[in-house]
Length: 528
Image 1: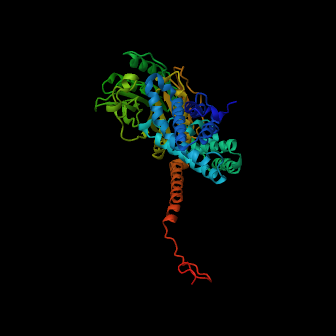
Image 2: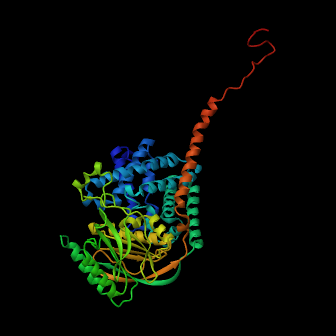
Image 3: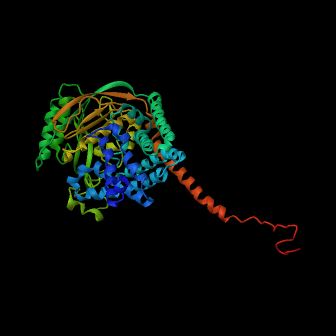
């Protein structure tokens, strides 16, 4: 009868198992939203890696698992990028190879010592954070699918986000996975594993008790306009504008403080289409409030295509404008187009690169309300929302459009990110889309009112609480990442010292020992 070890002896079977194990964490994210599963999702992958017969095989297990994770997390890109989705998953999956080597180094068979297990509870989560830090670079696709963001609807986790951002949640989730993996696979080292679980519980409890809570002092009424799916064609942008205009006009007399349209809600530069600017100004006068729209068009005042959040008042554009800074790779630009431009021939990649903005903007939206706009997947970057909160934004606003991925997990995944950004900054966040999911979250990350799903074509008004105060995360920044870097540096130094110590011992001169004399003579003169 074959055992699991015998079955895994085949390299291809083992690689397949690694791909499946790496893909498991995606079940903790929307749509499945099995948030609790995140705390054990890495256990099968860790258990597989620790049985790797060599360090080289562990590297492969990490690479294949990373490939499975990235492919599962971005599977909804396949209809658009086709084979290039697999290429991206393969390249980014390599980031997990060193982490897998560390797993085998600390937890490898037959049985790691309690000291190694204790070290693993610090080093392995730190190594995971290094992966998330590297792949969070915008040029590599940004921080989509960061493990900690799976906890967007868990109140204790959101409290942790206010202390150390999504990074702290990721660190603790990986710590729990490592501890559970040890409890399941290494019976002789259960004490440090239980201690790691206890420390995680203590840290969570401490954050719950001692971290400051947002001080709500006022409320504003913010309306989100979601026109829904508008069929394509040359007149598609005009018909979408007509629908948004119709929905906005229904707000007349409802005493709102701000109206938000989604990403690419205006498909023409307002300088080139003064008729649209006049219609928007008329809407502002009718509703008695400013309107935040998003223009996706070639600008008339400078070369190139920009995605811009523009505030419209009763007299037209107020002059408040934010140009999107972080663009979606392949969707809005092609990295190293001279080398990777062929992506346009196998999928719906950008035919022309969008231009980038140069700085973030906090806008005075009227009625004394200060807002910080972001566009599309910029809501995945915690440093952008933190910067806006630090510069006085009272409400964070993300304008998005996921209509290309309407029937996938992407809309709900995107909407969930706003809960993390709100909790991190202690500022409410409005996530307004063209076709859903639109959502609003309070300053603690709690959901306010209903989501507007992907089948909705409507507007909704939300009572949004405003808060004061500064969260520890806004004040101290990405300190969990810095702590993880220090842990990794300390481990590298200790490994270096351990490696060099025997060499120093061998290179030291042997002490001179005089020949021993006996009663019968000496080695040099026998018999004397």
